[in-house]
Length: 192
Image 1 (cartoon, rainbow, N blue to C red):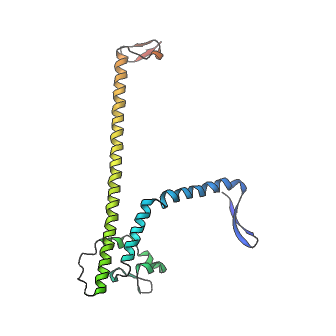
Image 2: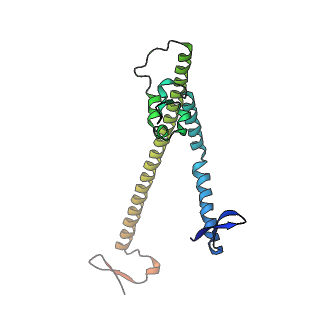
């Protein structure tokens, strides 16, 4: 596809040939379709909201601070302003939330108790997400097994039909449209 940047009335525009308009339309139609089916899927949106809620709950927790390129400790929500800190935001944050209970001390102040309660709520949210994902995985596995069973039954059914056809051929119960057919001694059909 041919396109270039043109200056129109002092503004820059991406321009393409009129022959390419159908291709451009198809590209954006596909993008819209993918966006609606994948990006705006109701389950994806629900999981996204739950993950966001979990991250918001541990945002102020001192054990979930991220070191920036300048050496200062940032909250999770502030990490998007520093590229080094942002690259440290991986799935390990969720793993730390899920397994944080191991080796932690008892909170001493009211503020620490609230942060621990928020951490517990975040853990519960992530555990619910993980349980739902496991259910979806189990459901997908069940679908695959069912599909394989159905394919096997179809193969067995096809094999049984083939056996029936061969029995009919051996008994000389041939289809009417075949015409005059004879069974040779080598179990081959010879058409005359």
